[in-house]
Image 1 (tube, rainbow, N blue to C red):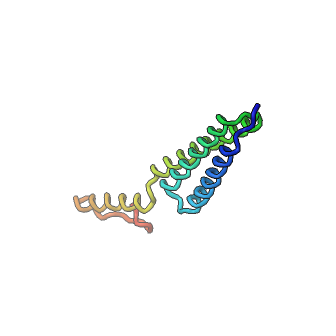
Image 2: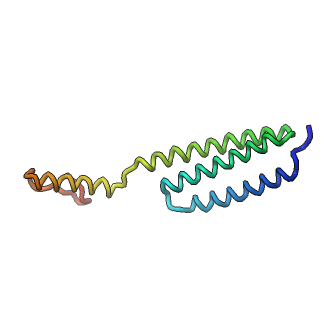
Amino acid sequence: MAPTSLPIMVRIDSVLDRLQQLREQVVAETPSVRRSTRIAELYEQEARLWSALFEHTRVRVHWRAALSAEAYARHCAQHWRIRAGREARQVPRWRADDQATDLQVAQHMRGGGAPQLTAHGGGA
């Protein structure tokens, strides 16, 4: 088996470093759907790089390491995609409270009695 060509390994290593730096920056942001989606995208890019290394290597240990790293990056991307989906489905508590209060006020205006509000602003 011939070794992996050095220029390809250097380029892949350089891009992997850059992806890690970007991921560290994004992880430091406030949690949000956008943040989780961006982290998933960065892991997907990393998985493609490991796949490229796998395709260009001829050294068995590099081949195995690239396969393992690709699988891990894909797993991480899936985790962050699921997290983004969960975050997208969540309604912030203040919005839920506002909606409950709006409903009670509307009922009151239609003659349904005085709204019953709790300490946090939502209905009883």
